Length: 340
Image (cartoon, rainbow, N blue to C red; front, top):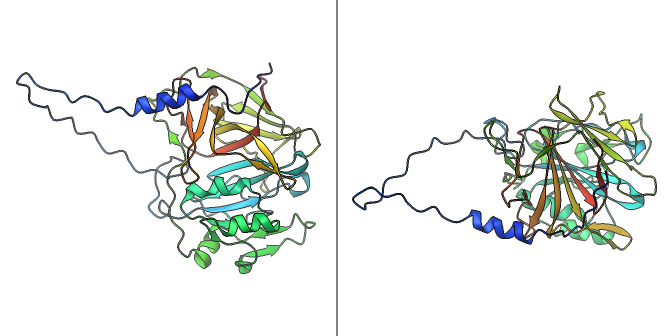
């Protein structure tokens, strides 16, 4: 069944409902008219900012390492993708995609292959409070964008001590970094701890308005070869969405199949910018959230570069994810189909 979407969708009502949710409750009063003291709620236990899992005191306040990772066939298998807290997939030239992997809670290493930046990257990492950004270069105007953004630049020029070439691979798919711990120890500078990107459910929380079971989803990024298509299939035994790319299981260098608990499909417009697809991440549009074997169809809203994107259900309430890893597909409009 093909579901066609428009990138800007009918989300104005959802945005309005968000403001309604912020209304303050009326204070309770007793029979004498005096305000009754509200009950004291137990403080929620601390969680990791990018996964919602129980916090590890040793890692909860660490900065994020953002790594651009090659994603064409010659770059597979990749290293570190199953240890990333969040992975974004974005369209680049010729219907190919690149990954932007966010590391904060785990000491992953090595990570790669590392590739070049794109204009879409800047609005993805800007909400992360000055993260470390590992990349292999870019066109002159993209390098200027990255250089003017609020990051700690740990590209392969300023942080050359952390990069190496894998002799068993062909260039340009052979550039790796040693890992999160080594990079942080050598180049942390004034990077900051991130705010959460998503909300997470407790066992008693609902999945979201109009949530319904779904077995699989197909995403086609373009029709020029590249990585198309991508499939996610729910596996209840492992509690994750098995990822397939170009018809093959997407596995890492350890042979582990990519299967995050959450997949967010954020439908956006891509505008050609000097021949490079430039993802439009400010504004609002349609979103599908795959979690716990269900799909929640809703909307996304991003009001400023430094604010995280909000994901709202059909009633305008924030969609909460399963605690754990998340892959975000920055998919062109009308590119996804529910297939099972």
